[in-house]
Amino acid sequence: MSMNRQGRPTSPKTIAETPGSGTFSGDHGLEHEEPLIFEIGDIAKSGVDLPDAAPHSARLAGLERRDEIGLPGLSEPETIRHYVRMSRNNYAIDTGIYPLGSCTMKHNPRLGEAVARIPGMADIHPLQPQRTVQGALEVMHELSHWLLELTGMSAIALSPKAGAHGELAGLLAIRAAHEARGEARSVVLVPDSAHGTNPASATLAGLQVKPVAANEDGTVSVGAVRAALAPDVAGIMLTNPNTCGLFERDIVAIAAAVHEAGAYFYCDGANLNAIMGKVRPGDLGVDAMHLNLHKTFSTPHGGGGPGSGPVVFSDALAPFAPLPFLQKDGGGLRLVEQSDDPISSRAQGRIAAFHGQMGMFVRALSFMMSHGAAGLRQAAEDAVLNANYVRAGLSQALTQSFAPTAGTRPCMHEVLFDDRFLKDTGVTTLDFSKAMIDEGFHPMTMYFPLVVHGALLVEPTESESKASLDKLVAAMRALADAARRGDRERFASAPRFAPTRRLDETRAAREPRLVWKPASPGGA
Ligand SMILES: *Cc1c(COP(=O)(O)O)cnc(C)c1O
Image 1 (tube, rainbow, N blue to C red):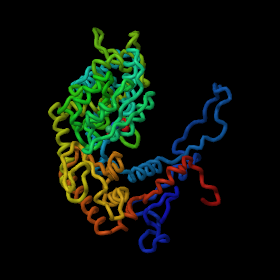
Image 2 (image 1 turned 90 degrees about the horizontal axis):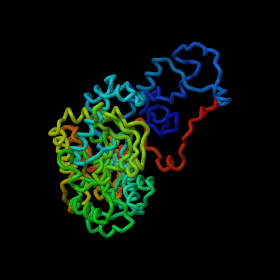
Image 3 (image 1 turned 45 degrees about the vertical axis):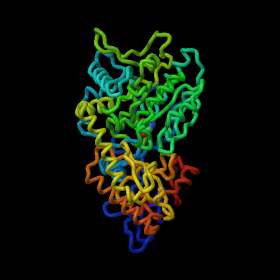
Image 4 (image 1 turned 135 degrees about the horizontal axis):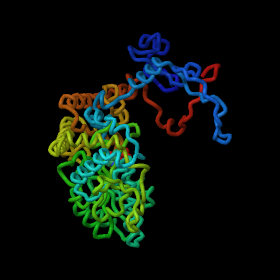
């Protein structure tokens, strides 16, 4: 197998490696093999002329850099080509469907992008006097209003920078509420099907995780929750719809049981896309919940950012929300950044520097206002319809989890399959996913949730047309047929057509190479 200069296996391009199948140049069609910028750049070759620095007195007390900074220099056209070539190796929601389960990846309307770039939104600074940014505060105020209406909750903290960060803020509020009552409660119930961030946030908040097993049908029963409740339980973290794509039918009874035991109900709201405009979590008994603006309300995201995870709170937890909060008075809108209120958290103080992700607030509000209330409801309905269209289209080819044998069961915004359909084929969920890349699709979420074997979790979102879903379904059906026919080579060698071939993920995890070293003059 050929390797690129960074030592990663690539699709066969060179004649020498695979006679007859490669090229003389090492490039492939109009795609170029792109080295790292440090390998092609040279500080001596900078694309700009800078005057020599004027004499100045160093104020770094001897800590200033002595040697070359070593940044790569490229001319403008070389720089542009480098980044454009790199970007062509990327897969994006603008190139095709991104059917990741759990992490809603929907179209990002260009309207939101245009509004976020308005200078009055994009060029303001968080330390500007508040009277000079009343428009921005109005956006935050209006956004808060929509989010509170949609969720039926009483208070909101906009500042958390991601879903997981919101979870932490919510759990710290729960902890502060118990502490204010003088109760030492340190356990959080988390169902087996939960997103990995749930137990991680609980741990970070200084709480212990106690797992709750799911039912045969993939949901959590009130009986299982009752059995796990105890005087040291601070709260429960539940996702609804859950990560199996199922609506938790017992949720009202679960909330009642949790409250009766003196605990709070944290709802992971990352899956709000399925229910916005249909169900208000506040009506279900939720006490705190984060909303992933970057998922439900669009924003280009992925690869670790950016995110925005505002948290909504019930009356009971509102006083323990983090600072800052918005207040409207005679002088207009004001961000309250300090509080003398002794009970309130004001106990937890701030959860983030500054006030949150302004660019994403603007995009989210633009998404909401351009859809309108009825439009948001329809987006949720279409997201659920699309997932069920995929479910029905794959019902004969794949095996849906928690469905009757040889049958299917309606789902919410995402549909969960397991690897029973691959039994005795020698093909794994990973192989199947890699083969999807060869067919032009970003794979769905795989091996999550952990409650089923070899999970394949598909969330098409409302953005996809019927034509696009038909193509996805046809490709997945054809692959399932190929697996059953015993065409193992197609899977074992996949992806064959991607710029980078299958990586040794175990080795990458065990022996990560985190530092780039320049090639020695003599060779590799
Ligand atoms: C995405 C997601 C999270 C975490 O959100 P981040 O913004 O990635 O931190 C938590 N729970 C569920 C169910 C999710 O899908």
